[in-house]
Length: 233
Length: 233
Figure 1 (cartoon, one colour):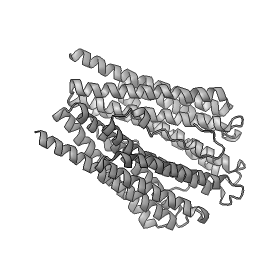
Figure 2 (cartoon, helix red, strand yellow; figure 1 turned 90 degrees about the vertical axis):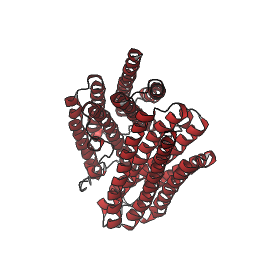
Figure 3 (cartoon, helix red, strand yellow; figure 1 turned 135 degrees about the vertical axis):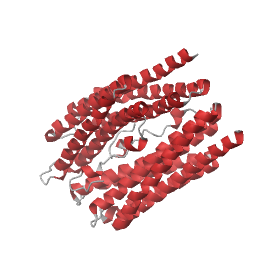
Figure 4 (cartoon, chains in turn red, green; figure 1 turned 135 degrees about the horizontal axis):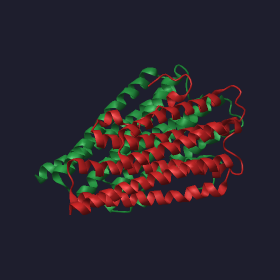
């Protein structure tokens, strides 16, 4: 009975890794679709999110069945509950990748991102994908040092977000309001995506080290402080 | 033993209601702080979010202790797991109210919202507060009809969001890019806040009726479709 139980725990972990890989790929492809104004690729990303949602529902059903059947306590119980939270983070990340793809589709055949912001958005997309790849690795290896790296990567995302805002607030901005709105939303999508990747890694750290959730919470993100002139939180 | 158990379940439900009331009040006060450029009120909202976070942590600890000690199955198990999800929705709503307050603080003594958008933002803030008050009532009464009302209210929020975008995209927009960015983010905060209130209500419906989470999922919100000219999802 215990063996079947640990097999089931492993399979939940496998599903989390698969979800992380799917959403990591999705944010990369959505970014490409937007920068290249590739409608097919955008639609492909939008449709593919369904698989992420399915995986989450399957995972939740299995986790709840596991709680009911095996009634785990202590660490095992925390693993199951934490898995539910990680799957929520990953499902939401998938939605955010889908939002990027929907923006690409909405502006097609135009490009949502003006050329002078192309490099910054590309970096944000790549960084988001890398963060999620590391989050997947953290789930597999439970490597606390790697998990802590994600916070540094997230600082990099904040810097990129600030760069984006500097462009927006520059008096020489010549792309009009619609593009300003698009770029504002895009910045927020990438930043939230990164937050969820960091959150996944922190939840693993919590399981491994038992550190308090207060210190590990990644949900409150300082997007307002990314605006030039913002006071710190 | 069973009695203590149901008392504990009731107290988890009480905490959810208290969280919903706190974040409902927070979004109302944050809106006032922003429209009146009231720095004190903004700071009060920012600080008060700590209590919501504390309530969430307490609730999670109690829910996990309950799972470990009482090992509920079937409906009772679902109630506990669903409570964890609702508390995550409510905690996140608190963050969003805090974001609104931080924007008020950031722009003080200026106003983030230009006068011609004052009425729309006021309506969004009031609607958000009303949605959360109804979500609290749904937790208490488990009234499915009331829960379904929240979806209609959410349609109203989408309409307000669309109005906001119409202002932004209007050629006569004269408030510059910074205000456009502020208003874009504000619109998103209110919309997400409303999504979380709807999500809480839907989770109660799921517990009562056993309907599939697929049909009840409120996480994927169509903010991009709120942009004029957007194709429907």
